[in-house]
Each structure stands twice: as C-alpha cells, then as structure tokens.
Length: 224
Ligand SMILES: [Fe+2]
Ligand SMILES: [Fe+2]
Image (cartoon, rainbow, N blue to C red; front, side, top):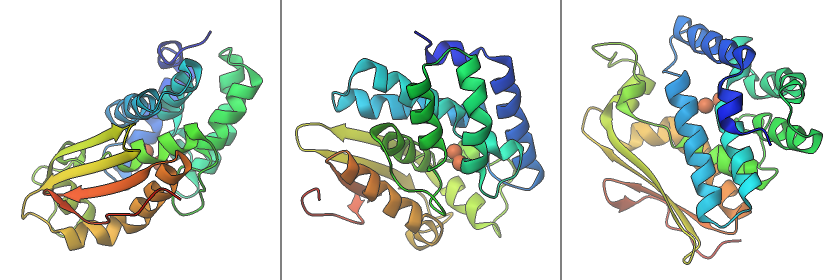
C-alpha cells in the first residue's frame, strides 16, 4: 500500500510543491511550501483518526494534505481544479488504487472556498486542516508588511490548534492573536473559509467551533 511517506519521496510531486511555493512567493502570498503542506497532511490525518475513520482513509487524508496545493505551480486562480487534474496521472503512476486517486483528486479539486464543496470525509478533513494553518511563521517578509492584511493577520497569530472531541462531536479551531491585527481583520479574510470549515465539520457529523483568544466566535447548535 502506498503511504504518504512514499508520496513525499516522489520527485515529480516534490518539484510541483516547490514550484508552487516559489510562484506564490513571486506574487506575494504567504508560505505554501513543505511546512504548509506538511502541517495540512498531519492535521487532516489526525482529524479522521480521532473521529475513528478506517486507517486507509486517514492515510488518504494525509496524502491529500501533502499534494493539495500543487495546482499553484500553474496559477493561483482555480489551483484546486488544476491540482486535481495534474495529480490524476501522477498518483496512478505512484501506485495508488484508482478509487483512492479519485477520492484524492475530488478532495483537492474542492478545497478552495471560491469553487469547492465538501464531497467526502477526506475532503472535509482537508478543508479544516488547510484553513486552520494561520500562523506568524507563514509570513515571508521580515519585518511583516502592516499594509498587507494577510501578513498582518498571520503575524498576529502566535498559536493555533485544531482539537477534535469525538465524544462531544466538536472540532474546535482556536487561535491566539495579539494586537498586531484584530478579530475584524481575521474575519475579513477568513469568514468564507470558516464557513467552509463549518460545512466540513457538519459533513463529519460534528460542530465547528472557532475560538479566538478564548472567546467563541461562532458557537453553533447540534450538528446538522
Ligand atoms: Fe490551496
Ligand atoms: Fe493550502
């Protein structure tokens, strides 16, 4: 069985991840390299693992997390769709089963809030993991640019965590922010992403809780 460790050694996928990160650096975006995709891979896997999903589905979430942003090597616009298309032959060539490849490309093709919908458990875990990687270490410029809201918001975040409570059926995303930025700034750029996380948590039969500096921003009722 092909694992995320095998995919991490694949030279074609690694070159796409590095090209995507360079391209996004050139257009002024935050870090999207091995650190980001490594975080998303580990977090997506953990979400499904803690909810008791089968081992292989957890592994597929880890693989989806590692490969989800390769489409940025082509263009930021529609990078989920481009990524899924690029990955289909590459993942088959790497030795994944056809049904596993279709699960992963469907998740990758739907991970962006502009054109994505949560379509599977792997897709749901990928969305929550990807949107929760907000942290000051993603800011590339030193000092950060205070006029860039993405820099400002990311720089303000000194801690982030995704906690799954399988008993209570909650997935909590919590961040600690300092006054470099504000909750209003955060919501200005993260509102649709957080709404997509709610959709993803509901898909998994859970509530999504967003907590900033210990305050619930979106406390919800029972899972839909
Ligand atoms: Fe992305
Ligand atoms: Fe991403």
